[in-house]
Image 1 (cartoon, rainbow, N blue to C red):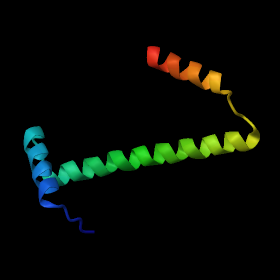
Image 2: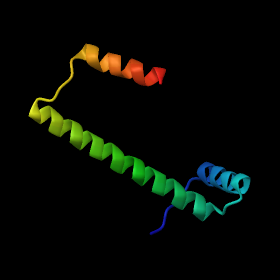
Image 3: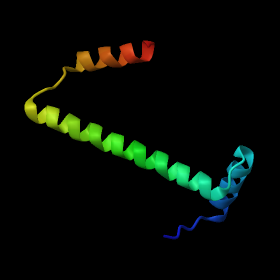
Image 4: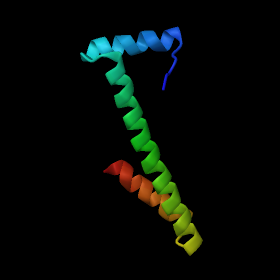
Length: 74
């Protein structure tokens, strides 16, 4: 597989690699791994949410707000 970057992206990639003591290929592979992990977790969470909604497992708006506020305080 081949990936092409525009000049700005390539410059930023090389700067980051230099600053972190890695080569650009390592930076790209690590970034892709993080993105794939994130996307997999996100899609799993969406699927779980949709399944919960189909079961009727829903929260009222006030409960959602309360849970978010609690998470932000933690």
